[in-house]
Image (cartoon, rainbow, N blue to C red; front, top):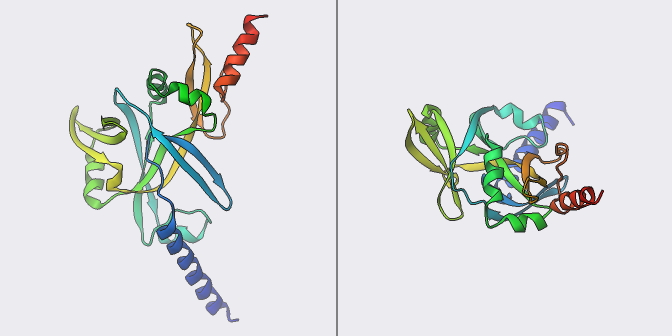
Length: 223
């Protein structure tokens, strides 16, 4: 087989595979969604369970990601796109605020038992051009809850709210999760102390399991 013909065949096969992945891929979770999320070689496990309740806005960070068509063929798991474009990675910046609000939520007892659950703390989206213009002109972004079980991105400029963007207004291309780190507070309650990237270890005296945190402190009490 001639080298040029082989290269064209390989390119067409890659494009076909990417197109299939784009049209058949499962809908990805939004920022602040809690569920069971695992990445495997043969496919991802995505089981969203609930959306966290927010009583106060949480600060977000945004980062543009420039994607070129050439990058699609350099890495197996590269982001899917058909032309040069700019995606936007939106991440929860104030993770301690998330932990504080989860600790006083009705869902805390559920999280203590659901050891496999993680929270989505970063999403990468493809937005239409009109929303991109608004994102780039904003001074600050916040995660807010306008109605039950729905989270949105609030845009502020000069300390004023100028726009509220729903995640459904863009296409979620990728997401990242954080695990809960549990410990005992001064009142001897088992609560969330921190959020760490999935796969990372918790800090000293905190644990990925609420049950393990409780057991550890019960052992320390009887020493």
